[in-house]
Structures are given as C-alpha cells and as structure tokens.
Length: 48
Image 1: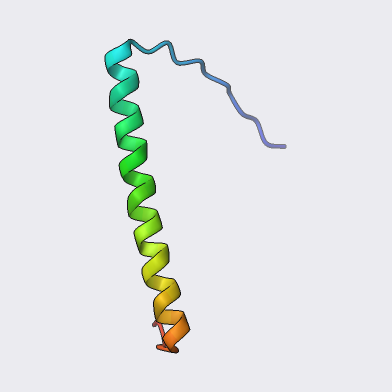
Image 2: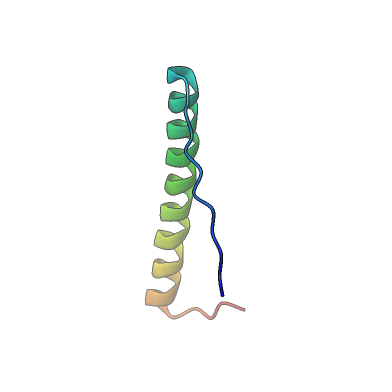
C-alpha cells in the first residue's frame, strides 16, 4: 500500500516568483534535451 502526504505551501509573493522561475528553467532544460534526442533519433544515430 502506498501512502502519500499532501502538503500545502503558503508562499510569500517573492517565494512564488522564485519557484516559478526555477520550474520554468527546469522545464526549458527538459524541452531542449527532448528536442535534441528527437533529432538524434530522426537521423538514426545510436544512443549508448
């Protein structure tokens, strides 16, 4: 049985801005990596 806890964050406006930027940067890096891998797969290179 899996157990989980839900936690509510009560952030200040400054903390909200910081977290939005951090999540946006992470998403941007992931999207760039995904695009790079798609190109590699399309041209047929092997990924080891």
